[in-house]
Length: 508
Image 1 (spheres, rainbow, N blue to C red):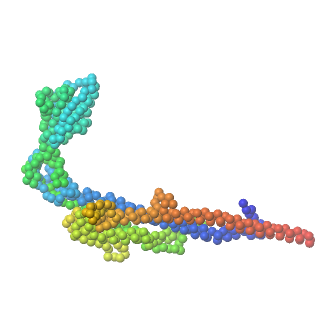
Image 2: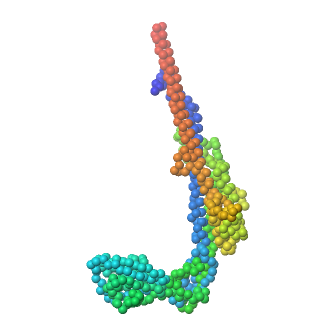
């Protein structure tokens, strides 16, 4: 530790002198600190761009990739109280006439008065149930010793294979088949099952001695209807024909309901318009970042400089200092170029229609205003017409396969994930470009969970931290040297003063 003498002999303000001298010595350190701050701001700007790109990628995945969300169908019924329908994306745009003469109903079994008493031992029963559609299942149940009537009925109701709802009311037991259809039946396959059902109140004459089938009180029925002139039946009131899911709610009393299936054009238009708007927002922010003005005369403020400024002044200064840190960045500008190119390349993959395989053909073009930097504009009338003409082709243009099939010289085919190619839909091309860009940015600026050693800006920050540490140690040595020099001067002056005083005393 250097002994510090603060100007007692010389009368000089040594503390201020050393402080002023050290300010000059600290200039290179301040520049290192500013450089580190700029790198940190730049890192954060890169990460904000990655967040922007990742959010757009997620939007595409959530809204543009699934056919069931994109290619929706609208279905109308002229007698919605009697017949309703829905359609999946594979359904054609068809019109169907349907009249209903009978609905499908469930079979029911109602017992006489029950005489059930709990057994003192476990009892296993075997049943065979036939569902309304004719499928047969063998069911085994173990009735526990001491089980009450409520326990037994609950056990019957909870067995999914049996498929009935059982309850007791006014001393009688009611079994209702959960599904509908004329084939529903219950057979009692062993003596224990016969004894149990007799105790529930089902008399012997309700059980066929040959087939062991329990006679229904109300037999199940199939739905009967005429569809486009064809008389047919179904075991359920809900059924599917040609990807259209029909639900029969009531008979039509000789009238005919017309079911019309059409492409939900509004849904597709809305999704594409939203996609274009999101794309425009994204490229606007990226263009703003890479074209932002760089104010090189505004460097990051030191703590001492901030002390002499108001909060508003600091904010305004730092806005200028942070501006343009990604100006003309090659990663981002390169990504924009790739995106624009991919947007206008024709789609030649599965489901392509040569008349609708480019954005311009469906009414989406680049803005004529050069200041828009590649933003897209939409002619909704042309877009709507394209969707109505061939909705599947429009869907494939945007969301065509991410895989490419190639055929070798020997005739064998190979399918693999593709980088950007004409066989990929536009959104999948964009996702591929975004993935590559995000990876490049992470290599340069990392992500929230990265350590500084894992990306290039971080390694530069580590290097600057090392330089700062070494320079701070050097400054301590320089400050000690100044103090040694001024202390030596003070000692010399003090010694000279002492000698002068001694001589004066001698002359006196």
